[in-house]
Length: 133
Image 1 (tube, helix red, strand yellow):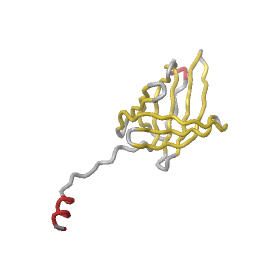
Image 2: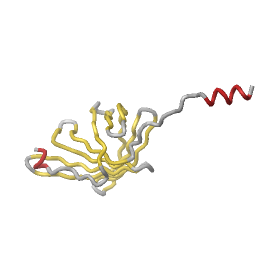
Image 3: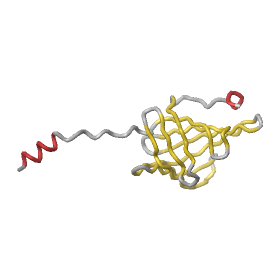
Image 4: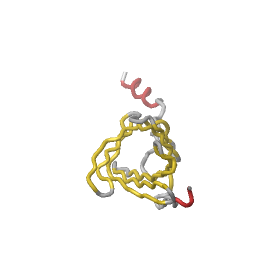
């Protein structure tokens, strides 16, 4: 009997892990504002640093957020703790619609808005507003 259990476990198909969100991701577009962009840096230990750039009327508006992230099933939960260094707690929940080593697609549940991000080098800098206007 023990041999059967060991033998059946040995022929089981390997479980492949989903690509990790750890790394740096760049995306463009926000609900109601297509002239915006963002850069998310997810760390393997669950921390998140996000930079945002809005381009309006030829001017650049930058902001940053810090917090944590976690995944449970198909849900990505982001706990924002600080906005531009000031305490500003909130929780954002997204569905994970697609994750590969090079791209992620998530949907913000509250507004049903999809975000598409591509993996970039950790030293990647967002383009200036003059280049994207």
